[in-house]
Every structure is written in structure tokens, then in C-alpha cells.
Image 1 (cartoon, rainbow, N blue to C red):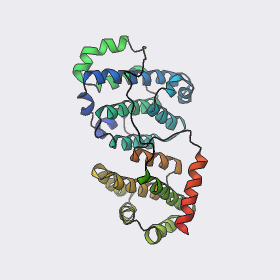
Image 2 (cartoon, rainbow, N blue to C red; image 1 turned 90 degrees about the vertical axis):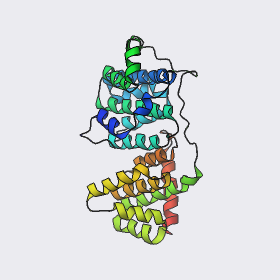
Image 3 (cartoon, one colour; image 1 turned 90 degrees about the horizontal axis):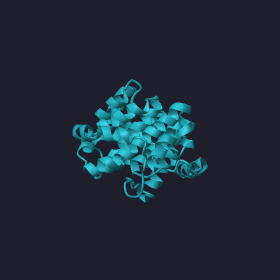
Image 4 (cartoon, rainbow, N blue to C red; image 1 turned 120 degrees about the vertical axis):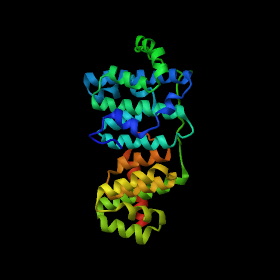
Length: 286
């Protein structure tokens, strides 16, 4: 998670395995150049009229991943939450360096746009991630062609997200229902439900571990366990943390989908999410 004092470049250096990008084949690196150009163009639009302006440009619809990240940022989502969404998706790309690289480029670009960093600085940073040798051999070409944005069927990097995941769907709405209980009925009530009614042993464990008075200790435990834990454990840890910290239901929904590896339709009616959460809440409390 990026902190307010972190510079974006430092955050990506310490949080991601950037060597995976440097080791990509040259053909893949040239495919990534198109996404650097996409971020650069969007940055120019935002610089002129604000981030919301990107949503009125063709760049907003050019790529699903960029669409989601810009949607979150333009909606006022805190950058720390957006950075966690990026981190959670990254866990799903252990077997695909090109998906991982694309996510890093668009994620770093979106956060830099939010910071108001100019497009040339964004280009300069992102091209350095491709490796020193590639940079030396192609820097002039990249800059001379920086206005030629051409993402097509041949050169696009089409990340495959999960459409529907029955393993996590019910659990996700259960956790959102518990968050709703915390927000509306308080900490004692949600603790009673988790430990005496809901019956998930792993959730009880992680909730107990993270529900400490010292928030720095809680965050330390969370960060260290998240590094090497399986997906289900990461999901339940994140659920526990979101409930304890009383995060917003909408932001938690995006975090959960990122852990699952499911793409979130930003334009999905929020009422549909709330209706399903209410149904799960009624069943849990029955």
C-alpha cells in the first residue's frame, strides 16, 4: 500500500519485482510502449482539465485495466486503496510476466496522473523499467514516436480476468455483510457474529490476530502474512482488516475482486451490490 509520504517510484521499487519486466522479450517491451503512450496521453488530458476529463476521452475506453484504475481515481478513491487493488491483482499474475508488466505500467501511470506528474516525466520513468540496454537502444525512437498511439489486435496485451468465481462469490458477499454489520451495529456486534455465529475458523484466526489496539502492529502482521499466504488466506486477512478498519463497502468490494482476479465493472449499479449484501446479512443474522 502506498503511503502519503511515499514517492511513487520508491513505492514500486520496494513493492514489486521489477526485474520481471526487464527480462521480457524485446517484442513484448515494444508492445508495452503503447501503454506508456496511453498513460502519457491521458496525463496530458488530466493536466489540462483535471482527472475527470480522462473519462471523456477515447483513452478511457481503450483498455479495461486502465478504465478501472482511472474510474477509481476519478471517483475520489484514496491512492492507498488504488495501490492495494494493483497489489492484489499482481498476485494473480505469477505465471505471466507480460500481464504483470502491463499492470505495473498502468498502475504506476494512474497513480502518477493522480499526483499531477507531467507526461514526459511519466514516460521517462516507465521506459527505464524496460531495462538499461533497451532504453539506450530505443530511447530516441520512443520519444520521436510518442504521439503515435496504436493499440490494435496484433499488439494489444489483453489481460484475462476471471468472469465469475463460484468459490469466492458467496464468501465475498458474506464478508461485505459482516462489514455492513460493523458499520451499522458496531464492533462488539460484529465480533459476536464472527466468533459465535458465522463459524469460519480461518476468519476467526485472522480477525483475532489483526484486531489489536496498536494499529502499527496490526498492519505489520497483515503485510508480512500477505506476502506468502495462499489466495483464500489473503482474502480472509483482507476481509478482517477491512472490517476492523471499517472501510467503505464499495472500496472493499474492489479489493475483494482484485484478490480473486475478477474484473470489476465500474458501471455496475451499486444497488445490485447492496441488495445482495442485505440478503446475506439477513441470512447470517437469522
